[in-house]
Length: 113
Length: 114
Image (tube, rainbow over all chains, first blue to last red; front, side):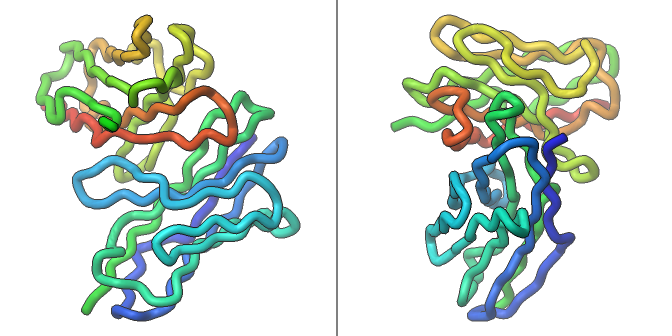
């Protein structure tokens, strides 16, 4: 079945450090891929998405490229800020399985000044 | 444009009781999904409704049920509450059940079972 695997946290970085959060997926068909972010006490917010191979999603300095050959969708940011501290979820939606969303377990990021 | 609204934000119940949670989607969105979020299990899909019909269902017991009304608002019901049902319940809406359609989440209802 479809699934998403993302790197275990928590991740702690200093401000202005480079961020990578790994995400790999297993899907029956050709899924759309998403990164969501959850700030404390809030629901999930869409951060970026990519709907086909080699697409790059980007938002707020974050980027992720849909790599079909490695079934990956790693999240990157060149210079993190304290305000980026949150939990990040990788997710997929696969038309083959009725467009149900599958989420990774989340990676907690803390950025220290 | 108002976001997804979930009520109530917090709820405390005791074992054996039942509870109903409400979700109002973004105006124009017709698909509503429900998730249970816990520290140990992460986000687990409960069910999805589109045009008042349940389209998908996750692996939860029959104590968990839902429905969607003609105005796309949705309710989730949990009967015979157990301690393990303590969680953050999230509702998400989208225009439709398409793979390209991102889901927009509410802030959740935090349910605590005593």
